[in-house]
Length: 193
Length: 193
Image 1: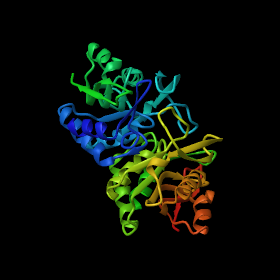
Image 2: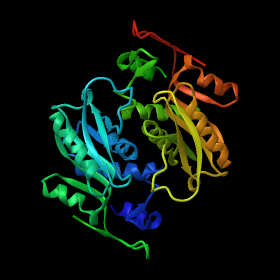
Image 3: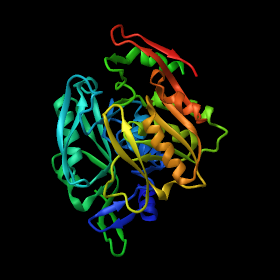
Image 4: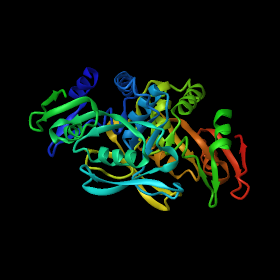
């Protein structure tokens, strides 16, 4: 998606350790108009899939997830990262290893909101090693729902998570795929899949 | 807002300890159409305020915050609850005591995205004792921005947080205000301010 690639080139900053800072428009301050354009694009891509639920993970997936769900006229469901006292009843759980935070955490989704009659589109803002997606896919499998595929704003292609999932036959569509980043020159090279 | 009150009566569940479970449409699964109606309503209420930024707090404020920001054609900025490695540079910080999680945590907002030229609308899904709002208001003050007011989906009026803020001259508008809840009968009584 040209609009997102251009925005990354304009406002993204590359730091050592493979960190791409896009918090001016994607994961701290959110450009909701841009997210809406991304939502419209995913609607085109997955238009024939009869999506009944968009699934994401807190916190920064919620913004893009909401905008995507609007176009599918279905609810957004977000996996929570810790068990809170306000979640009652049975839940699906999975474990996710965080590349950003260097820890492992549990994600949970209430069984009330996902079941075998659902067709799910998983949405997230970032895809690096794919660990968050693996956790969400595991939860979709547990629920018996059908997985239509995944929709990602920015995929770090060079970290291989997306390609690993594609090799397993999972549909992964990304609005921008970064194949190379250089924190010394600031250069960002985009690719396609 | 009648639509939200009706939804709370239909799908909300009252539990002991003043817990109102609305996770089927507001803070786990999100009814994005309902959130969009809420956004339209806040646009009406704050239409003459020249809002430049909607500010909320992760995680469940992000959904309603996005929908509100759409109507004001401005970015959504969400305060983060812990310092992550992807936030670089100077930040505003404040402390928030959580009623739900029974702990105190730091919230942070990058100084890059909030300053004296901004007019801020603070949005959150819930208002109980008002501690999250106090933290966000503190951050707006630190930034030198103008605070237009606060917009809340569900205010637990009987917990007094909203009235305390109003007594300080802060504009607080809530789409539904609960004055009484009974976890034995399930009864919910709405009020106005």
